[in-house]
Amino acid sequence: DIVMTQSPHSLAVSLGERATINCKSSQNVLFKSNNKNYLTWFQQKPGQPPKLLISWASTRESGVPDRFSGSGSGTDFTLTISSLRAEDVAVYYCQQSYSSPFTFGGGTRVEIK
Amino acid sequence: EVQLVESGGGLVQPGGSLRLSCAASGFTFSSYWMNWVRQAPGKGLVWVSHLDTGGSSTTYVDSVKGRFTISRDNANNTLYLQMNSLRAEDTAVYYCVRGAPQGFDIWGQGTMVSVSA
Image (tube, one colour):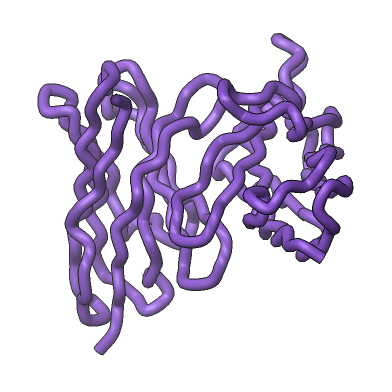
């Protein structure tokens, strides 16, 4: 099984500042045949289901603000919130869909400092 | 509107059974792989199972193999999860999730399963 490790577990950032979340997979999640990383980022707010933010490691879903960006390839990935807003308080998860079981990272809680 | 609505959760004793349902609407259900993902209270997300478009190819996380069965009724746009031999550690919110090429793109609101004596 591919193990997904997120860091940090929690993060307190001032409004308007940058938040950076890391995700490392125990195996490569880049499919060479299509050059796509099967790595997804989700945002989960309290009492709500997760919301898909970024797919293929770096492609924002429609309607996701451009302050959210994803980067990385292979085994190391990053989600960046360039200028934190109050509505971004949530838990963020990465997930690999390269191979079953489609494992999630443990989550990173983002709060306002 | 694209929507997934789960039902069937509740309180069950250890060793008991439940069947979860997920009603899909607003998209061509038969064209998508479907998944179940669970989240224990205060914990992270755990992928449980997925099923191909025709209902013939299934996979499960090790902790539920032999106890849970995923299935679908494409004529009625419904996904199921039959859960047998339930354990306390199966207590969680269970989400029905659409599997698009880019990832798990549509999530239901979830249904709570509590396993307790």
